[in-house]
Amino acid sequence: MDAEAAQMIGAGLAAIGAGIAAGGVGNVFSSFLQGALRNPAAADSQQGRLFIGFAAVELLGLLAFVIAMILIFVA
Amino acid sequence: MAGESGKIDPMYQFKIEPLAQLNLAGYDVSFTNSSLFMVLVLGALWVFMAGGMKREMVPGRWQMAVEGVTGFINNMLTANVGPEGKKYVPLVFSLFMFILMANFMGMMPFGIVPGVHPFTITSHLTVTAVLALFSFGTVLVVGFWRHGLHFFSLFVPQGTPLALMWLIPVIELFSFMIRPFSLALRLFVAMTAGHILMKVLAGFVINGLNAEAAWVPLIVSFPAFILMIGITLLELLVCAIQAYVFALLTSLYINDAVNLH
Image (cartoon, rainbow over all chains, first blue to last red; front, side):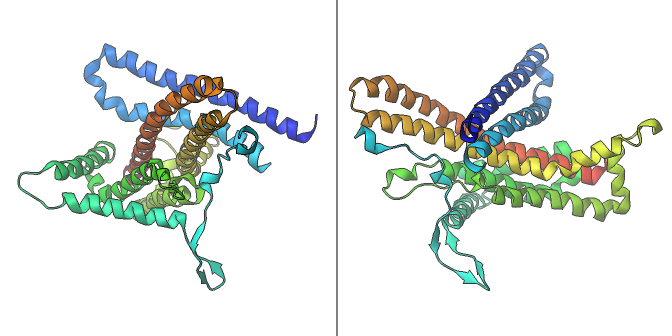
């Protein structure tokens, strides 16, 4: 296998990370909705934490994308 | 048509082109398309604020819009920092509005004018890194100004057992030092990824329409176009969420500097 093919395969493998992060983002919002529907009065005060959790999960998924971009365009 | 249309380069949209050459003491400080869009963003922001700062007794729609945004930032800082947070409203408001306007400006369909294409200034790590340094620098200056060397107690949470003193401060220091990188990287990658995705989908639409086989536009271009409308809406949401997350994290970090855990 030559180096260019290995780069492309690596970039494709990095897409798995993006997919798993999608599951993570879904988990953040589904957990929030589960909690919010049980106690709607407390939901609004927790929205900041919802977005912090969302930002943390999303960042890790975006890192997978960065790795793919580095493999395709930089390395 | 099919062969010569070639592939559409999704990275071309991030290219910085000098519009007016300018050299200063050996450094290239040309006025680029990035600078042009920064000026456009500042202009849009100025118009938005100037229209809503008339201080009318009964606010009109425009003034309500401006008051809504300032009130939103004000509430965020009061909730996260406390009564002292009011001092930092101008900083967080400027960061929030600049990022929001820059994100939206990159989504505007300027491309319908031939030869013009929008440029997302937040899709460059240099720009977002400077914005993140504003946030991080404020935390450092405020923290050392208010607490002096006592600011370092930020790295030792209350109630840390002595047996863990060798580990916890290292982790806390690491999580503190990584803040500007995560702030900058999140905004930069979110905007870059979204715009690449949209450009790739646009490439499907255009290359499909140019294909020789008659079934390709119906099977490829049309679904891709429908998908692109949805992705554009999602991108508008991401634009707002990224600006909100940046402002929210900045206010949380300011809270660390002001109140020390």
